[in-house]
Amino acid sequence: QQQVKQSPQSLIVQKGGISIINCAYENTAFDYFPWYQQFPGKGPALLIAIRPDVSEKKEGRFTISFNKSAKQFSLHIMDSQPGDSATYFCAASGGNEKLTFGTGTRLTIIP
Amino acid sequence: DVKVTQSSRYLVKRTGEKVFLECVQDMDHENMFWYRQDPGLGLRLIYFSYDVKMKEKGDIPEGYSVSREKKERFSLILESASTNQTSMYLCASSLNQPQHFGDGTRLSIL
Image (cartoon, rainbow over all chains, first blue to last red; front, side, top):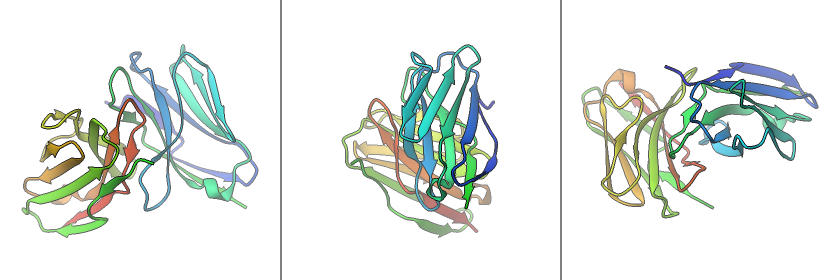
């Protein structure tokens, strides 16, 4: 049973636009929500993470929005650039070091 | 910077062979993980270890085993490789989050 649902599966955004990827979770014990970025031939790397005591976290052009009551969180990439083209994974963890991952979103930024 | 090194980038093995995938981390992390990554399925946890000689099953442990004799090294073992184990295998380590990943081993079972 998938505990973290991610959408869309793929996304094409014009350069300079806003990329939005959404995730929903079921387990209310989750208390740590990271986003990972993966380039071809590389392992996933932590991009940004949030804990449920805040509703938003921003790092540069990347923002996580978190809605605890709806059990949803999303990644916003402002002013999207071709270098942002990658696969993005949301994940969730609760009370231990294990992560449950979403199925991934392949983002393509076109000029 | 944390470095997680997987011994092989590409590996080709035959059905029925015993396969070893090795992972080494250099940051004295207590926790280490093995995932497999398949298109459309994301990363699925096979096994993890929170200490030397300790291991716990993840979501898809069938057909796999692990070994952790030293803190820095975590091995994934395919006891008798099958074609449905063709995949990308990722190792990670952590201490109080986040997890740090290696670049993966693409394993093909023929």
